[in-house]
Each structure stands twice: as structure tokens, then as C-alpha cells.
Image (tube, rainbow, N blue to C red; front, side):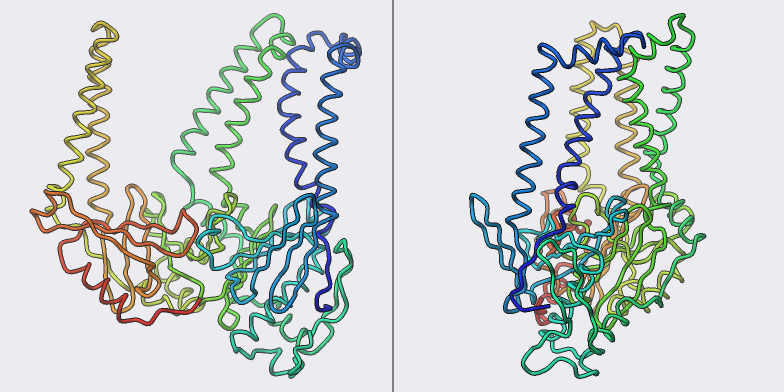
Length: 538
């Protein structure tokens, strides 16, 4: 790859950016068209109405808006260039407002590869680059769409430069292909539209590529393990919504089928039926998504990096430097907790920042022994965290919870009184039942929380446990804590209780973690651990 050679995203990025608009218009227009269709014999008449008078003006307006949107995206694509210049990735946008972003390669925390169904069909993929920046931790810093071969070559070059900057010498250094002058081991160049792939022909590139892209992975989940993970990942609430949605949809359809004018009834209820079907399929997907999302799940430790691949309809590939990992999560859903199964995720900038990728799995659901075994293979740096035990909440925590409990009860009483006054006492029994149920739910939640929450402090790690029906552990090295704060309400102070909050360098969903109430010197251990360990350079 030639130094300073500029290239564009693949032209398909225009389709990806505008496709959602077209789908949204179809979702809005199709139900309305069905409702107004009436008799099938009027289709021609309706078509003529759409092409005349106000219908023509509306449709011309819609097509004009679409034309402008697509035209603007093509213009942006044509005027956006990407290049590698002096150990940095430079993205230049030469549209009406010129913009130039420079991302230092040494600051990259993740290089992730994603390929959805559309990209699989046309042979492209998406490169996602994230940096060690808290300000951009909630979104991917750079997204590049290229032909798959070109994207992999680009990724290898970035990884090679990251390797050189960190002082590592893996397969590329052993082959001695990288000269003192810094000549790239990847020959060839990108065309401006990203359609021509560079070739990795040197021994360095071939060795590095073989190590990264090799078929041998440390862990390769089989079909049975994927099914097991999917089963233990089932969300009980989503399952309940699915069952209720199916019953409601079937009841609605049966009612429509019993009406004399079947076609008119179906067309009139088209919007409602489509909405019900969407709800059912959404709940169904939320229930079974983990059966297909993690198809062909593979993980591999490559030097000081983790290589993670999975996906059926959407292929995901992560390459995570171990020194960028801020913490380890060990999760149990309600079903997994009943079956004594555990899964693990990693916490760092660049994983779990996109809404579509909230989870950053490392180890799928399995027994505790299998979790520890695989953790020693993939991430031995955190193996000690799995062994660390958490202490249960002290019994005096009930006194500290009394304050919010009293406030909650007063709110329930006030709401019940307002409902009684609103209905003039007609539904007294139902108001009392609702208030009682709310109180019982609160009490049940506190009992479950008391049995689940806990804190553990070791030589290197802080480990906290949180949850109600399920259980989530977080293990983090003291040195990776950005800052910590502790608090007490008056009752907690009287009983010598404290609770806290740790902040990590990660996306907002993973940056703040609470420390449950504790009574010992946990706060002093955390402070001492933060001061004793030298800060890591990331």
C-alpha cells in the first residue's frame, strides 16, 4: 500500500446509508395503500389517482426528496478520501464544509470487521476502528466500507503498524521483511473506489496474515454449545411478551375470519395486524436471537490480542489488544442461574458501543469449570478474578434500605388515594390490590437484591456482584479504575455502611458501575490498590 495513497469507501456505502429511508417509507405507505384499496378491482383506479392531481404532487415530492438524499450521499462518497499518513489514518471530506480527521494509529483500541447480509451478497465488509477516547466511547470513531479482500489487507497494515509502535516482534519481525526505512510489507494500492485489493505477497505479510486469519482457533463452539448458549440467554420478559402477542394476534385473526366481508375486514385491520406481527416477531427475535447471532463462535489468543469471530446473518470480527481491556463481566441470566451456567464478556472502548452490538462476548454459557478453563486459555490476566469470591451484603443493609423503602411506600399510598378519589370509591378493591402488588414487588426485589449483591477485594482486582433474578459480576483491576466515589445516607452512616461507584474508560453503558453496600474497609483497599499499581499506558 503506497504511503499517502488516497482511496474511497466502496460505492455500496450509499445504498447502506439510504436503504433505511426507503424501508421506512414502505412501512408507512403500504398499510395506508392497503386500507384505501378496498376492492381488488379498484387497483387500476387507485394507480391512476396516484399519478394525477394531489396524488401526483405528493409522489413527485417524495421522489424529489429521495433523489436529493441519494444524490447528496453520492456526492459525499465521491468527495470523501481515506489514507494512511505518518502513522495516522486521515479521513478528508471535501464537500461544502471541508473536514479532515486524523486518528493516530497508536491510539486505536479495536479494529472490528462487520459484514451484514447485503455486504455478504456484494462481497464487501465494514471496518470499525475505535480509539482510547472517553468522548467518543459511545460510537465507532471510524467506519470504512471496502471490498472484503481490500479491507483485510488494510486491517493487516494497521495491525502491523500498531505492532511496530508497541515494540512487538511477531511473525512479521521474524521474517525480517520490515526494513528500517519503514517500507510497507503490503504491495499494490487501492483504487479510489476501493474495488481493487492489495496483495500481501511478502513473507512478513503472509506470516502475519496466517497467524491472524488461520483456521485454528483456541475455542470453536459447536452447534450444541450454540444451542445451550441460546437457551440460557432467553429473556423471561421477552418470552412472556411473545406468548401474549401470539395469543392476541390469533384472537384478532379469528375475530376477523368470522366476519362476513372477509377481504374488507382484513384490509381495514391491515395496520393493526402488521403492528401485532411486528411485536410478535420482535419478541420472537429477542427470545431466539442468541441461537443465530453467535453461530460459528470462535475465539483465539494471538500474542497480546484476542481474535473473536461469530455470526450467521451478520458476521462480526473483533481484534482486541489485551492491554486495552478494562474489565471482565461474568453473567448469569435467570435460567442460567437456575442451571448454574456462566458466560463472560470483556469491557473496553470499542466493544459494546454501537446499539446493535451491546454485548461483547468472550466465552459462551457453560459450567463454572469450563468458564475458568477457557478464561485461562484466552485471558489468563483475568483468571484470578474468576476465583475471587464476593462477600454478601451485611444484614444491617436493611436499615439503609429503609429510607428509600419508606419514600416508595408513601408514593404508593399517595397514588392509591388519588385513584380512590378519581373513581369516587367505585374500584376500592382493585386500588387496594394494585397497591399491595406494588409493595410486594418492591419487597421481593429487595430480598432478591440482598441474596445477589456483594463485593470482593483481592490483591489486584475489585469484584462486585449485582442483580435480581439474574446475576452479573464485574471484575476490574484497581489500576484501570478512572476514579471512584463513596457515599452514605444518615442511616447507613449510623450503621457504618458505605456504597460506591467506579468509573471505567468504556462506552456509557459500561463506564459506571455501582459498588453495593459494605461494612468493612473495602473503600481503603480500593484506594490503596489504585495508588499502589502504576498506571498503564493505553
